[in-house]
Length: 74
Image (cartoon, rainbow, N blue to C red; front, top):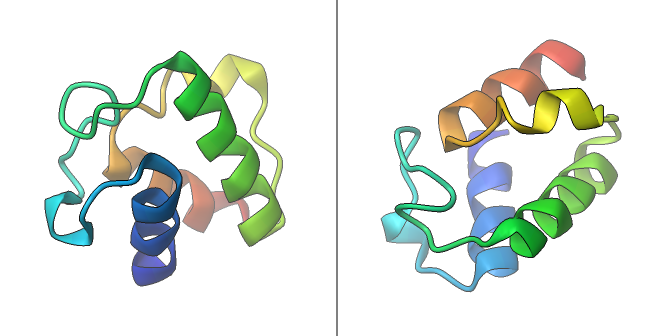
């Protein structure tokens, strides 16, 4: 699941997979803007067949938080 998420982030944000760590911040470390973040969340919802409520999005700024959310809701 981690590899699948890293691959998705690399493709969506056009960053090298090596730059992605669990501690990486989507905006500060990986250069995502708000539109990128929304697109990424939509891709994650499709890829992992989950729904991320808008109220949760602000809590998912780091890759590790995204992975935990996916694991907890799949």
